[in-house]
Length: 163
Image (cartoon, rainbow, N blue to C red):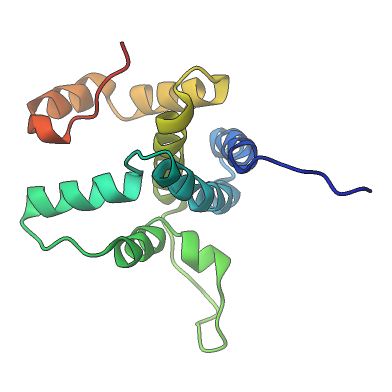
């Protein structure tokens, strides 16, 4: 098979699309892995576009809301990837235990949120797989309640909504 050239955004799009399909089919482990891979690409693409990636928005919000010092991007990125199960599914060192504990449904949801947020920052919400995941969140995470809480947040942390 000959070599092909791919846009990194297209690779991340395919990973997220597949991750959403797997997530909705309850294959959470695979969804975490693909969403984590897509996030690795998308964070850099969002930065290159001069926009704010999920990891930066999240660390600033965390710091403001809870009064903690803002860790650097790399440290916070590692924290997020640990919390969302991305690293533990991707790495296995010689001294790591043979078993791991995960809340795979929740961690897959969070890993996908991160990837989708960055994808939407670059491409918007028009893709069917993005809409499917956002609708799943709306129904399963009480969308009206979440929106009320968002509206109550400090304005400096609200992203501009598309017109």
